[in-house]
Length: 395
Ligand SMILES: [Zn+2]
View 1 (cartoon, protein in one colour):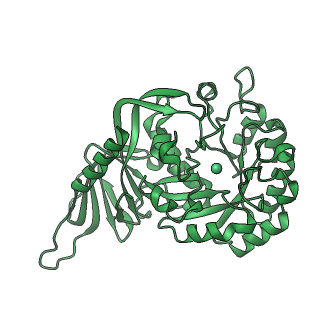
View 2 (spheres, helix red, strand yellow; view 1 turned 60 degrees about the vertical axis):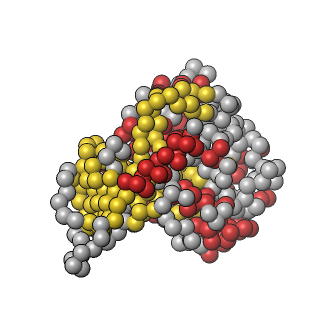
View 3 (cartoon, helix red, strand yellow; view 1 turned 30 degrees about the vertical axis):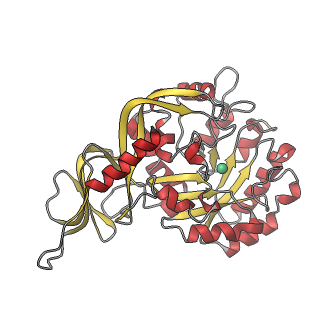
């Protein structure tokens, strides 16, 4: 069913696209015009039917009924037109085609979050440097990267010296440090692993992203190590050591972290990171995520992840309004890493990165990481991507 639908959207968006032949050599005013879509740009509080005009790779105008011809037109009637999506926790750098695959989902900016450590960082650097869209890397503090036996179960793998050298060699592409702290990754070393990750990151003025959930140390011990600009991913992870206590209250150390500017990210993933009952309790407190992210891998299409728009749909049934869900994957995500500074918005002059989404009504099933299904009646589907003013064919 899903495949048929996705096929339909691909076919539909192709049919809606038209190229106007150039007559008499007059240059059209715009390179691309996205007509008649419902524009949601949370950065500027736009939520209305408008056209988006693009020239020279930048947003040239956003308003109703834009006059002037364009070399290409996308008919976006009945669809959402939003800033290009930014996914701050993926593993797209693990395979050469990763970035291109997520680009088709509307993801025009991404972070590879800790796929590799210092020993093999060049592999990810090469993929991310060759990606069509802007991407950056968080270096895993474990020098051997993600290991089945646990990245830093042997604390010697959290090697400050080699991590610093790897960053110095790749200052342009490494944007932070990833510390995976679960008991099956760091074991008893969680606190020391985070301390060393901060030692590396602070010497370059970079953020740390922690992978929380099922740690041995309580969050009340770990969170005081987080500084402004750091990111907590897997914020919906169920106990032990969830961000809520047994009485469904957000821990004081978690509230304090948000107050001092630590970001809270979903990190959908596949195992141990989200369970509906924990999500319900956290959402009820009003402690909502700053950002959505997929924790994307090559098998995400066939797991509960599917794509970033699907992950963004999961909280619509829990009271999150559509513009807030869009904000979490655009303007909020753009604030977390410097590379996305001028993105996440359709402001005039911004790079022309645009996601065309379809918000469908129907009966949809959403998965947590424990095989539990949740019914929903709205879901975002990717329908088209524009990167730097160029329309991208869906992979
Ligand atoms: Zn991950």
